[in-house]
Image (cartoon, rainbow, N blue to C red; front, side):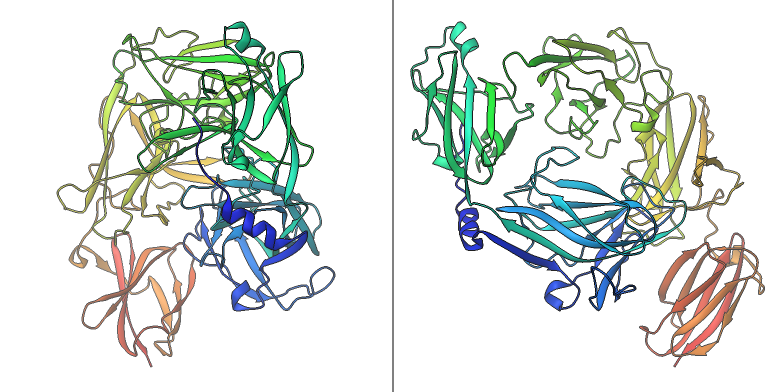
Length: 624
């Protein structure tokens, strides 16, 4: 089914650009070409980067100001930062060729650029480039016509984006905090606004199946879905048309006049895009980027040549004591979307086995997994950790070997079987709870992250409003590592040797300290430990002992800048309270020395409460 949609805005934009033009997105020299980037995925969560003086105004970049960027050593591999405020006017890739930027690295690494569209009209796009020029400015460019390295693996060219994200040393956790600089982010436009693309469709199989073929048309967004472009027969069952079309992405289908017959593409196909009208009607059309001299050669109703495709079927069984949710998904691996995406599995005959059949090209291979439920955060993904079919280097996913022909994969949820005869699993219902009485709970809520959720966030609930948040899982016996998280930014931090934790050294300088529980049918988890503690919360200073040697504060009177030093190791937290008892500031700190900046607060007297386990200290300070 075609979708009536015209790229009118796009065409107007192209005509204005002419043949060649470079548009500056960021140079950090004027307000219109400057912004900050907000960090995510690390201890810097929510903080902004800085516009600074150029540390090396030589060579390719002699401008006065540039932007800095930090990738902390305790961050996630995907730690990065997004433009906030967003770039004025966004990023248009219509008739664009490359997006380029200048970078300064102290040592070799990589940089990745991601373009996002918050309304979902354009596919997210990300590309990565290695950097081997160090301690001097170098320019790196990203080909906007190249396929994204992440799903849905489409090019960026021909779209409008409002989100701009940067990653320095993408998919890496550095041994130490690393700093970088970047500048002069530009988009290069150029080339012809229209191109000649050849479309060829093989109708031989359709003809063998009795389809009556008279005239074959190529109908798409480039011709308003009309019948202006006829594909001529080549005498071998194929039909071709070379058409002048706008450069960039386009939707199209082949159409046979006899019987008013449109192609019927599937939502799970690789070469399609699916959109919805206001009434919810879905339109699944072919999608391709039109380039000059480009050739598109496929079988009717397929993304591939007739002799280059294979049918791929997945069959998934469940153990008798594992209940399938309303929706079961094939997911992951960079090719099968998040749970809740296009790859919904069904049990048509009610035998408890869920299946999906898709078409892929010969040679296709991919990592993949299964999800019991609609969980875009992968919290309902199967766990096959430690089993033979799990790849620990790829999120403990399964791997599909390259296709050589039609293939059927049969297995069990959470098991590395080769059939759907599943083993009864010994599952234990385990409740995880955390007491947030001593915390200011973030607006986003409280989350559980752990091995059983693949370290994805699972929202915890406080149904009775007592400050204790709970979440329940059905788990197999064994040990599980986990942590609690307050909102999007604050993850628990423990010291090596804390009694409720386990420490893991990956051998690359990264040490992970997590809570741990042994599930064996007995609830070994403290009923409700305090956030960031192995013990229950102490909610009143009446239950604490005063220790005036925990810390030193200097000076006691200033314009708002104070130095706080911890004398007996790092503290749990500190709070700044007004003389009226109102909490003004709160923070945790594992550093032994900290600069406190209270210059933004009203002048007057305050109390600084410092707490370390069961001891506390109070400092009086004055901002003048």
